[in-house]
Amino acid sequence: MIKSTKKSAANTAAEADRNFATPSDIAFDSNPENKPRTKRSSKSKAETKTVTVPAAERVHSEIPSNVNALRTTKQDLVLTLLHVDGGTTINEVMRATGWQEHSVRGFFAGTVRKKLGFDLISAKQEGSDRRYAIKVAA
Image (cartoon, rainbow, N blue to C red):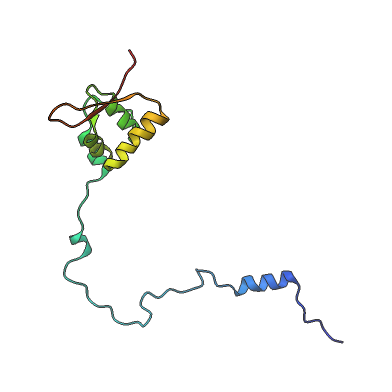
């Protein structure tokens, strides 16, 4: 009696799954030839990097004293700065949030004006930075 050599599709798929190597099956050797590692220069990476101040520390030192402490998100922080008498400058928002200048401008145009619908006014006085504020309805 001759046996059939054809395999069913289910058996073929199961065998393919068993024969497929998963990432956990593959051992990664970072030093494939097991060569001794060379010494690095006397300066470590930590010595060459600049130290940055965490955002939480920057924010607390830059917020005016009359800002409501209940606001927690950066959006709320910026909106609070815009509601403060005299408004705020782009540099003040940059220091308070850690954002870059183009991000602050984009937030003013996209979120404050378009999404939230506030009337954002800007004024530039001689010898000072442009100040932005949300116009409060009288």
